[in-house]
Length: 186
Image 1 (cartoon, rainbow, N blue to C red):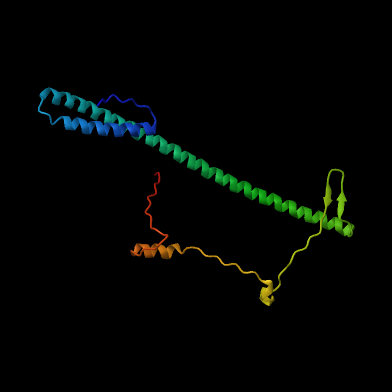
Image 2: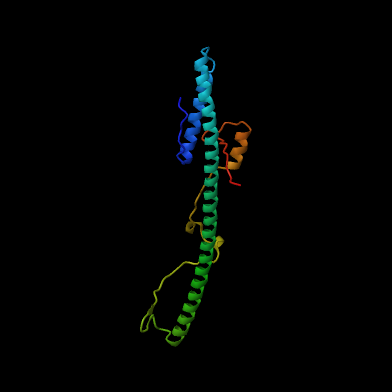
């Protein structure tokens, strides 16, 4: 096994190199059991080189992983900032829309007071039009005849109860308890 592995800089490549070095070290350690002194000396020299390469690989891998953590933290911080900006812009948008609605109501009120029968108002750059619509308002749902009611039925799994039953050792067809590990950068 050769121990002249190059540092590509890629996190994945460094991980692959670490696995290759571990395999090479195991193979070289097996060669130390030979009775031939020359073979044992050569295996020992290669093993020392592999161990040095492994140490360098571990340092490079740790540095790359640390840099990757920094990028992850940066991206999460940027996402949080953008989420705050989106909330701020949404709040501003709601405020603008609310003010526009209030102003429109006021305009319509004034114009319809002046011309109650009008359904359209034309201005030099804009036109204000209306359309009729109808909507049902239910004053007392309990007073309605059942013929006027529609019914819906929904169901969903009771995950909390299923989890407790599975933890207690009960077998439930169609459900299983998975154990997960979550990671957090500190």
